[in-house]
Length: 198
Image (cartoon, rainbow, N blue to C red; front, side, top):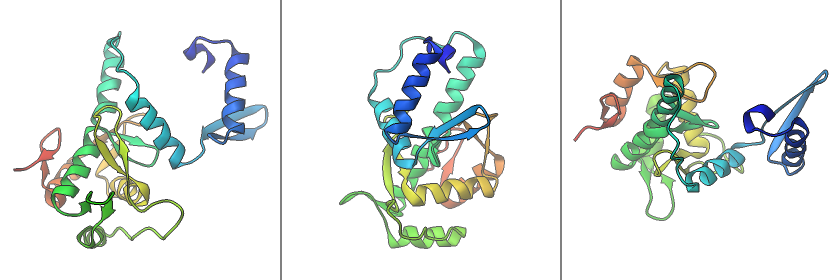
């Protein structure tokens, strides 16, 4: 990580220690190795929001693999535990168009939305400190995608039902043929970019 950031190993360690002590990262130790990850979904959403406010980088990717990775992340990815990128935004907008989500007084799941989730076999997440639905500003699309417990449950269902599959070890995901059919059937989304059918 230090090499990637262009800093000394001691500097990276110091920053990681501050992030762990500040509660943004959690760590696990295995022997002499230390593994860190984001502490929770709120931390992931905070980072996504900060990234969305940063100016876009003018530097184009320097290689074809880097360009492909960048396009794949913009097309569809996970944002901690929910869907993001163009696909996540398209799903959120289609759910809104169909009256499954309402933005009138903050983002809420409608009764039609709850019925739709049940129809898919997605159980309503139990009440916890985490909000059922929440908007998360997408850093590539600059529009909101669905987060919260429902967003996480929908993402988990998409993996379990074979709608999406991970691309390598990155956060990028690919929409499968099964997923394309399901999104067309359930949300009226069609085409490679999964835009709403009008």
